Image 1: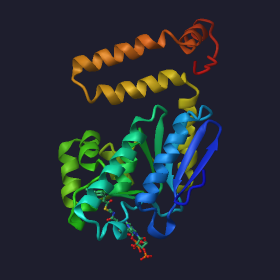
Image 2 (image 1 turned 90 degrees about the horizontal axis):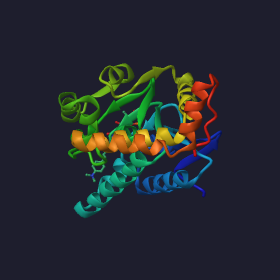
Image 3 (image 1 turned 135 degrees about the horizontal axis):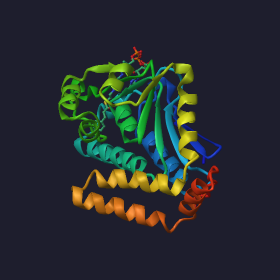
Image 4 (image 1 turned 30 degrees about the vertical axis):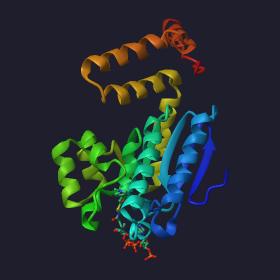
Length: 260
Ligand code: DAK
């Protein structure tokens, strides 16, 4: 499939999506969101791919937000439809069975910060800048920012960022738990790929069940969450990966997982 607003690369079990609208600092319009939806669907059904990295093209922006020029004259119903589309696409990223890492290479503002937040975790370059500037435009965040930011950094810090529209640097984002690691810009993709390799060396069914248990369990009450965890744990014992992982440990060798 040919994309106009993003680049999809696949290599060694890793798919990388580059949001690619350099003239608008990779801002998201409807076409870009629809292409992102198609790309994520493609990755979902591609058995040769076990992990997704999302980043921005160029060295200035991850995604500078939803496209303001596109949103400027929307009617209320068009605005609602645009918000609903973004939410749906970001939910598809969040619930993709395979791990998703955001490699944040520059501005991650508004919809860009929200895209980074629907990934499993975020690694940032020193050039990354995060923020939810929406209130400065007279709107509320519309792609999950009011919900994912407090879940990631706590309610007080999230409300401060959402209400002030302050833009923070990579180190501050790390301090508040929005990103896990900060690297030099030229080392960003290799750092992310190195983390990806460590994930890919493990049992992929267990990785995917772990992701699902975290995502589903943290939305449930503790009793239901423990059942979700117990079900995931039990399911592992039906897999070849569990046999291989435990046999390898007993036999003092490296496991050779098949993802089955
Ligand atoms: N949209 C459209 N174009 C953008 C853009 C954006 N978000 N960000 C940058 N650009 C464009 C600029 O207009 C400029 O285009 P030209 O003038 O060259 O044609 C080009 O990218 C380069 O940008 P600058 O010249 O401004 O570059 P600087 O280095 O001076 O500044 C900047 C970089 C990132 C600080 C600045 O561009 C900036 O402040 N950009 C806007 C950031 C922002 O406010 N992002 C949040 C957007 S709001 C909802 C649905 C969705 C949303 C909310 C509600 N519902 C339906 C409820 C989401 C909202 C957002 O994401």
